[in-house]
Length: 211
Image (cartoon, rainbow, N blue to C red; front, side):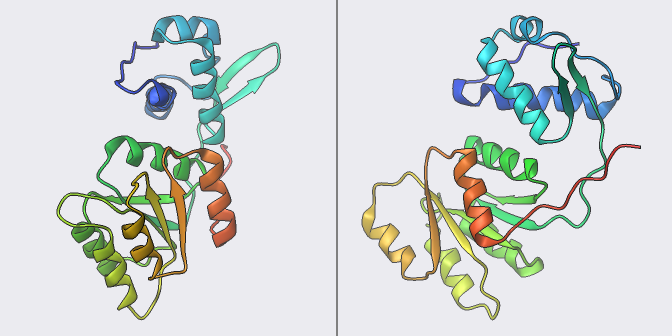
């Protein structure tokens, strides 16, 4: 059932494993209510530590795709997607950050639209109203300041969360002039994102329970 998964980023390996298991559950390869192999067995098959495998299972529980029963094991459960989920725009050219943030936000039942450049992000804003914009400052083809300027000229202002590992204080200060803006430093952690969502009042809709 489990296939070995490789990734160049050990810190994101548990996300890759969780995604692989999610595909198996959603495709029906793993049936609703089916008991998964033991965590020790899955860790061996994926070639990762037990700690990494447990992190993957925890992430699946956050997504509502498995349930763990003490002494009995971990069981798959299928749920219908959340209805009318809040829409969030993620503008970042780093695929690993996009993947991690998407996983975190979708785990909170929030719909994510991604863009790899400021220009693409601006285009996305023309067609959809987003609850929050997660924005990287340094990207190819122009900085995130271009998108902030576009937001500033819009009638409806959208809250912005800057995701940056840049040491360019001047650029960050320039972005802050468009405030109010929230700042999250890379590396990104689940707790940080949840705290920001809570402060901004963005909550995902509850998933529909399986029948």
